[in-house]
Length: 120
Ligand code: AMP
Image 1 (cartoon, rainbow, N blue to C red):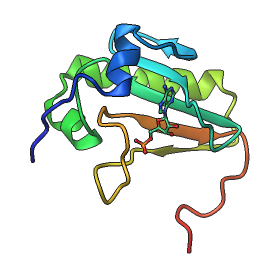
Image 2 (spheres, rainbow, N blue to C red; image 1 turned 135 degrees about the vertical axis):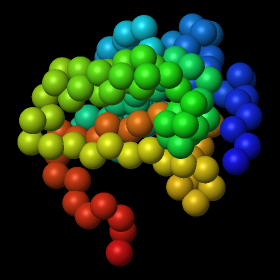
Image 3 (cartoon, helix red, strand yellow; image 1 turned 60 degrees about the vertical axis):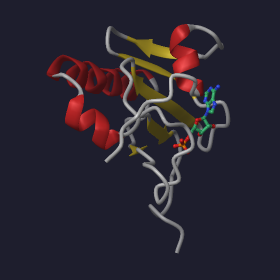
Protein backbone atom coordinates (compact mmCIF):
# COMPACT_ATOMS: atom_id res chain seq x y z
CA UNK A 1 0.00 0.00 0.00
CA UNK A 2 1.09 3.54 -0.78
CA UNK A 3 0.36 5.70 2.26
CA UNK A 4 1.80 8.93 0.84
CA UNK A 5 0.30 11.84 2.78
CA UNK A 6 -0.91 15.03 1.07
CA UNK A 7 -0.17 17.91 3.48
CA UNK A 8 -2.62 20.14 1.57
CA UNK A 9 -5.70 18.09 2.47
CA UNK A 10 -8.42 20.01 4.30
CA UNK A 11 -7.91 18.30 7.67
CA UNK A 12 -4.19 19.10 7.56
CA UNK A 13 -5.23 22.73 7.08
CA UNK A 14 -7.58 22.47 10.06
CA UNK A 15 -4.76 21.04 12.19
CA UNK A 16 -2.47 23.90 11.13
CA UNK A 17 -5.18 26.42 12.04
CA UNK A 18 -5.41 27.62 8.44
CA UNK A 19 -9.18 27.06 8.37
CA UNK A 20 -11.57 27.13 11.33
CA UNK A 21 -13.33 24.21 12.95
CA UNK A 22 -15.88 23.63 15.68
CA UNK A 23 -13.72 21.79 18.18
CA UNK A 24 -15.42 19.33 20.52
CA UNK A 25 -12.32 17.85 22.17
CA UNK A 26 -8.54 17.96 21.79
CA UNK A 27 -5.60 16.19 23.37
CA UNK A 28 -1.92 15.77 22.43
CA UNK A 29 -2.64 13.25 19.70
CA UNK A 30 -6.16 13.87 18.40
CA UNK A 31 -8.68 16.56 17.50
CA UNK A 32 -12.47 16.12 17.43
CA UNK A 33 -14.67 18.62 15.63
CA UNK A 34 -18.16 18.87 14.15
CA UNK A 35 -18.70 17.72 10.58
CA UNK A 36 -19.50 20.69 8.35
CA UNK A 37 -22.37 18.77 6.69
CA UNK A 38 -23.86 16.70 9.53
CA UNK A 39 -25.67 13.51 8.55
CA UNK A 40 -27.15 12.89 12.02
CA UNK A 41 -28.10 14.91 15.10
CA UNK A 42 -24.58 14.21 16.36
CA UNK A 43 -21.84 14.08 13.72
CA UNK A 44 -18.32 14.54 15.02
CA UNK A 45 -15.05 13.71 13.27
CA UNK A 46 -12.11 12.45 15.32
CA UNK A 47 -8.72 12.78 13.61
CA UNK A 48 -5.17 12.01 14.68
CA UNK A 49 -2.74 14.92 14.70
CA UNK A 50 -0.15 12.84 12.86
CA UNK A 51 0.00 12.49 9.06
CA UNK A 52 -1.95 9.26 8.50
CA UNK A 53 -4.04 8.82 5.39
CA UNK A 54 -6.37 6.05 6.55
CA UNK A 55 -7.40 3.74 9.38
CA UNK A 56 -5.10 0.95 8.22
CA UNK A 57 -2.18 3.38 7.86
CA UNK A 58 -2.80 4.68 11.40
CA UNK A 59 -3.18 1.16 12.80
CA UNK A 60 0.08 0.07 11.13
CA UNK A 61 2.35 3.05 11.76
CA UNK A 62 1.05 5.22 14.62
CA UNK A 63 2.85 4.88 17.95
CA UNK A 64 1.16 3.33 20.95
CA UNK A 65 0.80 6.79 22.51
CA UNK A 66 -0.87 8.14 19.37
CA UNK A 67 -3.27 5.20 19.21
CA UNK A 68 -4.19 5.49 22.88
CA UNK A 69 -4.62 9.27 22.58
CA UNK A 70 -6.89 8.81 19.60
CA UNK A 71 -9.09 6.26 21.36
CA UNK A 72 -9.25 8.47 24.46
CA UNK A 73 -10.60 11.23 22.23
CA UNK A 74 -13.30 8.85 20.97
CA UNK A 75 -14.23 8.08 24.59
CA UNK A 76 -14.35 11.79 25.47
CA UNK A 77 -16.59 12.56 22.49
CA UNK A 78 -18.98 9.70 23.22
CA UNK A 79 -19.31 11.01 26.76
CA UNK A 80 -19.64 14.72 25.99
CA UNK A 81 -22.06 14.26 23.07
CA UNK A 82 -24.62 12.39 25.18
CA UNK A 83 -24.84 9.33 22.98
CA UNK A 84 -25.58 6.89 25.80
CA UNK A 85 -28.26 5.26 23.65
CA UNK A 86 -25.58 4.36 21.11
CA UNK A 87 -23.71 5.65 18.13
CA UNK A 88 -21.99 4.52 14.96
CA UNK A 89 -18.27 4.94 14.22
CA UNK A 90 -17.33 4.90 10.54
CA UNK A 91 -13.92 5.10 8.90
CA UNK A 92 -14.49 5.43 5.17
CA UNK A 93 -11.32 4.13 3.52
CA UNK A 94 -10.02 4.79 0.00
CA UNK A 95 -12.06 4.31 -3.15
CA UNK A 96 -14.39 1.44 -2.22
CA UNK A 97 -15.01 3.04 1.17
CA UNK A 98 -15.76 6.41 -0.49
CA UNK A 99 -13.17 8.35 1.49
CA UNK A 100 -13.11 11.98 0.38
CA UNK A 101 -10.51 13.50 2.72
CA UNK A 102 -7.15 11.67 2.72
CA UNK A 103 -6.42 12.18 6.42
CA UNK A 104 -7.68 9.38 8.69
CA UNK A 105 -10.92 10.36 10.42
CA UNK A 106 -13.52 8.49 12.39
CA UNK A 107 -17.10 9.68 11.96
CA UNK A 108 -19.06 9.50 15.23
CA UNK A 109 -22.76 9.56 14.37
CA UNK A 110 -25.60 9.44 16.87
CA UNK A 111 -28.26 11.34 18.73
CA UNK A 112 -30.97 9.49 16.81
CA UNK A 113 -31.88 6.03 15.53
CA UNK A 114 -29.48 5.38 12.66
CA UNK A 115 -31.18 2.49 10.90
CA UNK A 116 -29.44 -0.23 8.90
CA UNK A 117 -25.67 -0.10 8.51
CA UNK A 118 -25.77 -0.01 4.72
CA UNK A 119 -28.62 0.78 2.26
CA UNK A 120 -30.26 -2.39 0.96
P1 AMP B 1 -15.17 11.05 4.10
O1 AMP B 1 -16.04 10.77 2.91
O2 AMP B 1 -15.24 9.93 5.11
O3 AMP B 1 -13.76 11.39 3.68
O4 AMP B 1 -15.82 12.30 4.84
C1 AMP B 1 -15.25 13.55 4.88
C2 AMP B 1 -16.14 14.39 5.77
O5 AMP B 1 -15.49 15.62 6.04
C3 AMP B 1 -17.51 14.73 5.19
O6 AMP B 1 -18.53 14.25 6.06
C4 AMP B 1 -17.50 16.26 5.11
O7 AMP B 1 -18.75 16.83 5.40
C5 AMP B 1 -16.47 16.62 6.16
N1 AMP B 1 -15.79 17.90 5.97
C6 AMP B 1 -15.22 18.38 4.84
N2 AMP B 1 -14.68 19.59 5.06
C7 AMP B 1 -14.91 19.88 6.38
C8 AMP B 1 -14.59 20.99 7.21
N3 AMP B 1 -13.93 22.06 6.75
N4 AMP B 1 -14.99 20.95 8.51
C9 AMP B 1 -15.65 19.88 8.98
N5 AMP B 1 -15.97 18.80 8.24
C10 AMP B 1 -15.62 18.81 6.95
